[in-house]
Image (cartoon, rainbow, N blue to C red; front, side):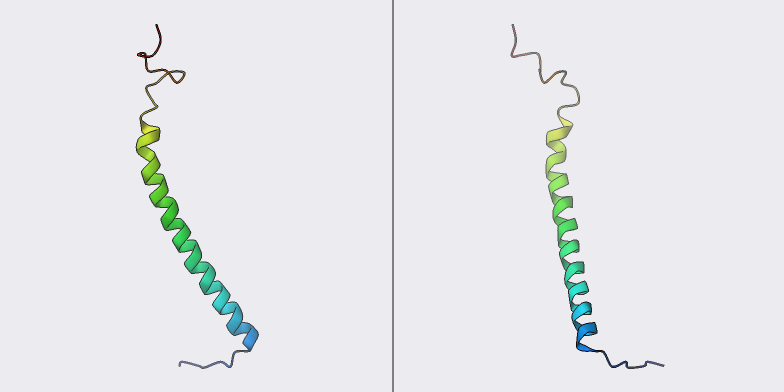
Length: 59
């Protein structure tokens, strides 16, 4: 049932490019997830602050 198809050099090159794009997009997604996780605590602390003040720096 496993049919072997003769691929042209162009087909082989397209397959290689698509595989490379897949690897790069997976790495990018992983890095963005890490970056989002690292930034979340920083952004989470600003929810209770109004107008960028925390109440201790003004008179």
